[in-house]
Figure: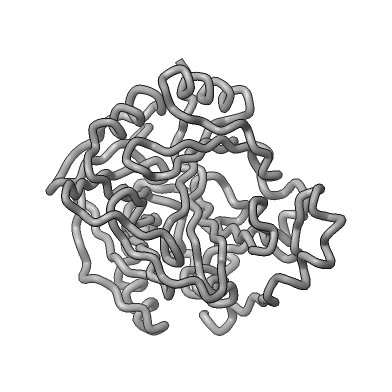
Length: 316
């Protein structure tokens, strides 16, 4: 039977200053700004999408930047670290590059036989870069990072929970995930166990609840092929007691949302139609794109948003 869920679609975080956010993800990390739009639920706030050349599902890190937002704190009930995939021999390059831009990194760590480094962005967002030779995705090669070292897309995500049993049940019984391995209190699950579909769970039974604000992940979205498969997932989840929203149109995909038992907000998003429906592929992310219902208020919306600019040349 064809899987309904095929991995991670996107991960969305809360950020602070919009310009610093764009500078870090396009400049320091070298991702492409593939869409500049608004938070459909809060139109006075940007929604940025950063990813590979086309914003392929499994590569897209998105942010809601609230200027002046206080920093959140990591804790239980949260996705605490977003992991990106880099080429096998790229760790040294990234340690040097991040250091050059004033970003402290961990020592080189080893997890499940692979090397990684861990750090935080300017808002405190937890990020990992995991070196692997098992990821043939191309990443964005039009940015400031040389092709030999470019971020290819997501590797996976770490959920910090008080307990894992009910979340594991959700993943393995209703979301096409399976157990991959465990190591040092970290439990790994994947649809195929490859970069782009990994979910790691660590438990902190007596840990403090995380506080969500700037530097926190708002939700993680999982991939499903189309609206038909999404409705199948929605029905399956509702029939098994999960409180799932109606389908919401996000222009570039359709979405449903629910909270997993540990408290993390989950989304199921369609691969279709993608980010090229309202901009030419060569010019993705250049213009402020609004949903049709917001177009009549474009002038007011645009005037309320801070001006931002791309300047990746200084990060080469």
